[in-house]
Picture 1: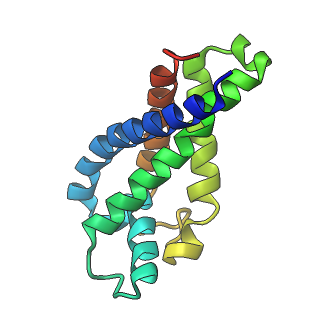
Picture 2: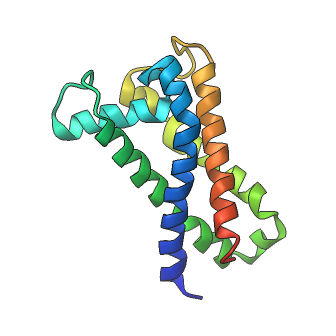
Length: 153
């Protein structure tokens, strides 16, 4: 098994899946603003902390640099884990991808969003819609990742 190829291809698949997710979410940014796209809001705050800048001054470069970096890093282990754990071969790959996307959402957004942004996803000022879009975006990310990885698994 070529572990390096699995990791590098997974990273590339993660970048492509983040692009799919970005297209989906861009509509909602235009509709709800930055706080309406939870991942991008987190990235804006993190970027402003790294750059020691005002978080209210929008940084599309920072937002999308972190978004794609996170997408690539999250995608890297997916093909490796699927290839290394034979029992996962019993589960349809798109189902694995969907579960992976939801797990990523739980770990990288649901649990930490408020601590990063100060905005609760439970009591979000825009209601449940940004949470639903974010969760759906991660679901789509996971499925896209699995479809892209299917060619090598």
